[in-house]
Length: 138
Image (cartoon, rainbow, N blue to C red; front, side, top):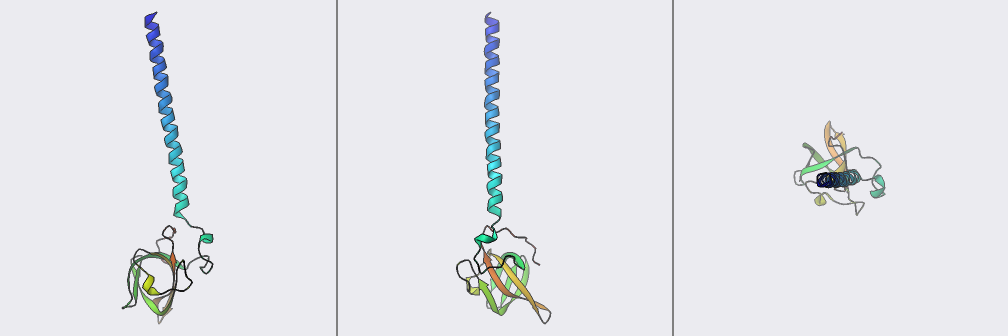
């Protein structure tokens, strides 16, 4: 009788271990699912969170690599552009700003025009850090 009692206790212990493991796996799965949902929500910012004076879509988007105001140059996504003398800069707090407010690693929407066959950035919209955009300029 003692032998079968030990087996029953061993079986109960084994079942208890499996239940604990199942609880751990279920909890991990729940946290993983929650994490994925949060990540997807944080990757994109809907147009409704941008100011009214921002367009619904940007001609091009990117991240500023560097900016040299004296030379009139801006690096965006590893491409170098000249900046128009009349460039319009918009940021999230004010409709009109200046190129002096632009910094490396800022995400931006921008418009490139062609003057005498050379690309020139004529308008820039500063975007939130969590704004998801395609790294390719158009």
